[in-house]
Amino acid sequence: ERARETLELMLGMLDVLIVSQEDVREVLGVKGSPAEVAIEIRSRWRLPIAIVTAGADGAYLVDNKGLHHERAVEAEEVDPIGRGDAFAAGVLWGLLEGDVRAGVRYGVALAAIAQATVGDIPRCTRQDVLRVLEGSDRKPRR
Image 1: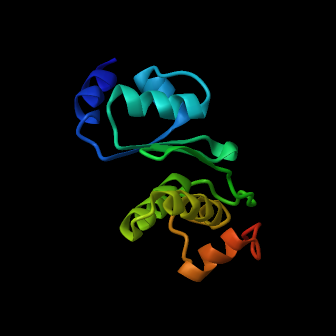
Image 2: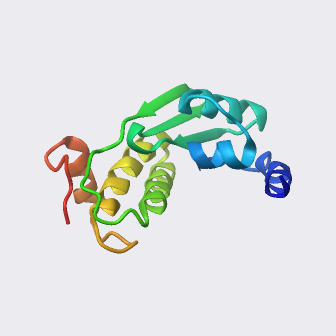
């Protein structure tokens, strides 16, 4: 409850929120499908961009263009550590390019690469990510 109270004070100041469905349920008490949760948190805290990650179901983005679902990229799970950070890095990459939806695509690819890599920092190039997204390396292994 204390974490919820503290976070709720800050949520209205964010431009982008990336949160797992599990964390938003446990900490903020928002329940429902990942799509419903993304819509609810964006509306409740008047966020420009809300992204809810849902594990094997991918990620759900809600922005001024509406709801967008990006399915997860299947990958062997060698080490799950770093998956969320890799996803966030992909979203930031897209934001820097001016396309948050591309960022969510980059994020699911980077998360797949991360979980197929030992350690929490996957070493990959832009081309590695794009190959995963185009399907030529649809099941990344490192």
